[in-house]
Image (tube, rainbow, N blue to C red; front, side, top):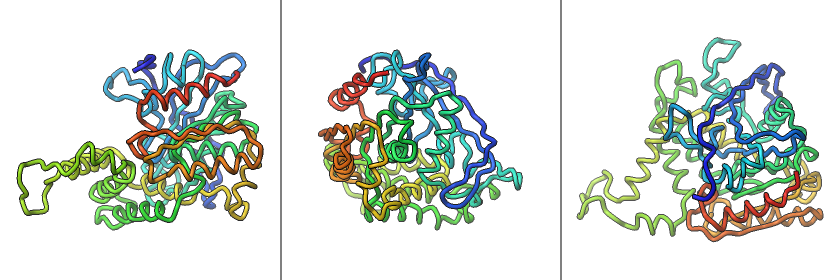
Length: 374
């Protein structure tokens, strides 16, 4: 792996007493955001990069904790000295969004009005709500303008939303494996995943905390379905094919094929640490994301509000957020005379490609970031 890891890191917590009025009409009277930083903020405070996480991500983007050496940040391969997000040059910020389950205020947090976990009463959150909360964190850190905001998938949508909502505070937006809004197929996948959770007998209308249980079966199925859509057919074929765990069919409904074993392992692993209510909120935020809705569906009009330079990146085998969806964003930016670079990268990992270490992919990010003037 080129460059170095940032090594041992610590998470931080910021408390906000100012109420946050949400797009859904709900209000959070106060909230916490958990975040991590890597590198040093320069005197001009001009070298900050915000990394936005995707559906199941969080604030732990790089490095490891002193007492958990195996707990490596989810994008560790791209952040550190000598890596594309070079911490010798940039100050990197990662956070856990509102509604999350990794420390920031979410459904499992205590509702001050009741003294119990929020559960089903936690208000629906949208991407624009996360952006407003992130802007308050930027204020706290003294960052008036981000050198860049970047993310993959739902994280890329946040970068896009930032460029529209706070155009004067974003100098560069790096939007990876994203789309200007979800297709009907994507919404359908999300709904099936949610139904697996909502119909789990242990869900208890979202208030399962009070019943000392968790809808593990539903969350497991949701993750299994989602994981299929994150991979490419070629990757699954190359990695698993039709390999059997044993040499012959058992003519039953247990685990026989290696792909079945893999999906069940991923489902069990995810259900062991993630919160079902958070999963519901995150997928709904994906479904609702459509900034052009404010402009009668005209993305050209929407992107006219942006001022940033852009790097848009897609992957050839990503069938959940295809290159064609990224090109819609590119076209809208070009229609407004914005500076935009586009890279379509041939990787076999499907939608998950944005998380992978690849010399070409990382080279594109590195070359773009090196041209940013601080």
